[in-house]
Structure formats: structure tokens, C-alpha cells
Image 1 (cartoon, helix red, strand yellow):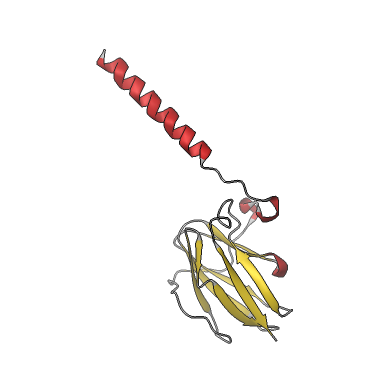
Image 2 (tube, helix red, strand yellow):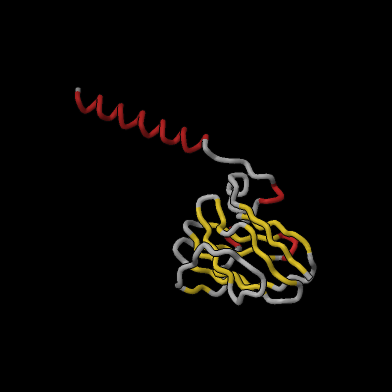
Length: 146
């Protein structure tokens, strides 16, 4: 009799867990949804990033990426100058700037180097393309000056 009760409780817990996980999925607008299987991280290094105030003309910008944040969330760059960002990720994320063709997967516990050269001045949004992350606030701004 006790075995039947225990089995019943286990079944109820499993079904309840499945229902909760199924209901927590977030729909992402199709414009921000990426096939993360096709993303390949660029040069991976092992040093840790830090939260720093980012100014123009730094050789390498240090950034942290985690559960629904980028730190710092505002970056500055100059037109025609190579921009290098070392992103230390906590969890699986992307660093994506649609207008500049930047779309890099960042893996948990790894610092990933992202390199690009902006060609046009303006303010660009960078975000994490993992479904639900942008909507949860994992976005930032890149300000590109002449």
C-alpha cells in the first residue's frame, strides 16, 4: 500500500514539473530569434572580464554576460577602428548586433573575443538572441562616433 502511494506522489511531482517547465517558455519575435546551433564562438581565451567604465580608444573592452544582462550595457567605438570585446559569459548567450553583422555565441565560463570594425556612425543595439533573453532585458547600446 505504501509503495502505491509513493509511486502516485512521484508521478504527480513529475507531471507537475513538466507542466511548470512547459508554461515558462517565452515566445520571441521572429526578428530576434537565431539558430544558435549555427553560431561559432570566435577566438576563446581564459582570462576573466571585469565590469569597467568603457571609453573610446581602449584596446580591449571587458564585458560580462549573464542571466539577462550585459555589463557594461553601453559601449563606445569609432568609425573605421577595430573594436575588440572580451565577453566572459555566465551561461549560454550571444552577442548580436544585426546592423554590423555581429552574431557570436558565448559559452558558460569562457571569455570570448568579439572583433568588428564599424563603418558608420550611429547608435546600435546589441542583444542576446537566445529566446527570451532580449525580452528579459539582455540588451545594450553601442555608440559609434566619427
